[in-house]
Image: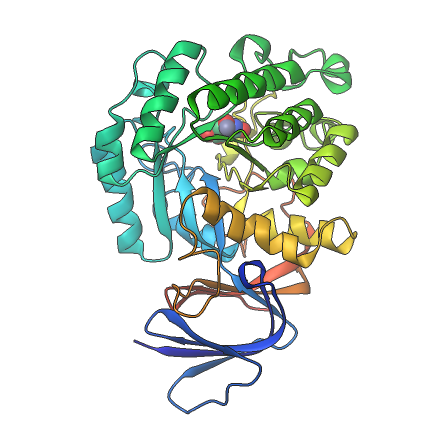
Length: 428
Ligand code: DOR
Ligand code: ZN
């Protein structure tokens, strides 16, 4: 296999407390050397990484690849291309496919298709309940054997707490991570945050308590069962307070935030309409501030892109009929670069939340989420200063449902490397 030499980059690897100029040699798919100066030997491809950041490739615990069943929105091939465009080599795919990923055959299909495409390591999540109906648990053992790494009914949450408690016991026994879209359906029948903008538009809203109550319930159940639980896409400041409390008590609770929630508030719905519709919804300035601070401080552990492609004809429907969700892979790095440029997070934290910590949560660390010598060579190389326009020409997704379409973004991936192979090369 090829040899790669990454020269002159600014290496950021929180797992080794590394932050400085260094060269990296990759041989046989592994990191074989990191030193201040590694001279080329002539038989390798040399990547000029001067003025760029070199970090462990990004790991996404939350993405919708829509395959099988909704491949007009995205499929495993286009989704893989969008992931590596954003610097991600490892992706947990959500099971709200059609049919749902509630059985081993679909898990196997997804893994095999991703392997054939050959760009990312696709780790499927299976559903917690059959058909995501919230009634009967799936065969966790069979899902795990087929290759599922996590369980979630994403898009909704279980409303039967006793079933959720049993799921936590079983999943924990099998080493499967339960992830929860923590939003009680009874309090989230609307289409945007319940507040100023929903009143203005005369539309039903989704209450902040819908999330906070579910987070509290999940935390107590994790505490009682001693199982791990991962809260998906935290959106409200009350949830942050609860997460902080549970963490203080040593409960095995982790969480992620969607980069769109770090950039936008409910007012975006007035400007972008259905393009800014997402569940849980964009909320207020105060919520956004609390999310950013919690991510910086470690109360929220990592980024989950919640990459959620939808076709234009679907997003052109009125707000109360359009499906929720926005593209995520493409804007994750720019979102964090923006926070970095505003002095709200450090470069080390940027890499931690996109790579090291999600790798840890998914039990992939210390093989992934690190650049330690001897580990799998999944590497991302990006330019913190590069400005680019997120337009149709550059977008690898089948869908373009993002409020950031056509806008200038700062921070661009130039190389994504998986197991020593370059799977994405960016152009300037
Ligand atoms: O906005 C969302 N879109 N939230 C979800 O939970 C599901 C997702 C989707 O599948 O489009
Ligand atoms: Zn969700």
